Image 1 (cartoon, helix red, strand yellow):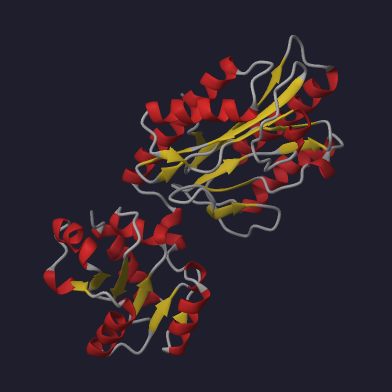
Image 2 (image 1 turned 135 degrees about the vertical axis):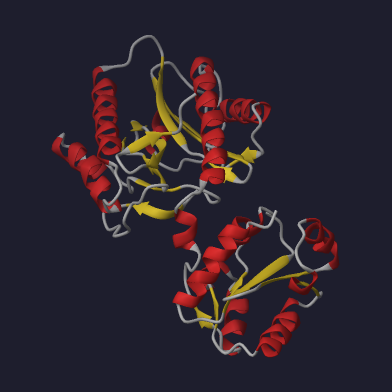
Length: 347
């Protein structure tokens, strides 16, 4: 479905940036404008009009979306179609996002005289509308239910991959389209690897198990992490580290509000962990935006200057990793509001 209001906002941005048109080729940017996540089309958005360049395989889909005949260009060679459109419209200031195109295509656009405009649609996508928020909340709800499910299933002798398969199966039965990334189940020493590749290791009594999961619902992603202990009773060190991370995450979520910078939230989480003597063991940023992509703007890192605004979605995910022993990470996807934050990853 063509998202008219989003296209109108993009038209306004094209005008503000002194362009006559922007060529949109990135998959997530295209999905934002049409809800169609499929290769085989580009869009050109000008100050007053928009065009869809596609092939015969997808032309029927856009006709069904009521794309005006004058706005639908069916041509196998997209470059030729684009050149003809630019010439016919007498456009002299055309932009493209070089961050979303292969090197060869970006070089071609530059050779044509088009202007590289990195992350052009990013400011629009960062603030979610009501429809996007509804999809995100459902995605987060499915993920939270899946986390509760696997928390009751983890046991000694189960492999990491078996746990991941059970999570994905549960997600799909709850209505998820797919996982939003390769699910992470890291047990024992593997839990100390932030982006561990889920393996055949068998979970053992006394293991910390980091479970980092997310799903996609109507194109929108979710992200959540919990750290479980398998066995009768966690030892003193695990309990201490888990408590520190939980306190750090709680403080970070409490600090989230409209107008703060991404680095402000990182500073809160990192500061607590540093105060407890584990600063060097917190080896990644505190969070990132979530939407059509699992990692997108705004960023929550020590150097992030982006300002948080109401309607933005971020993760808050501090962690401590003791190499060769165990790791703890706790993560939720949250909505930035005018007065604070709303945790979305809850059943």
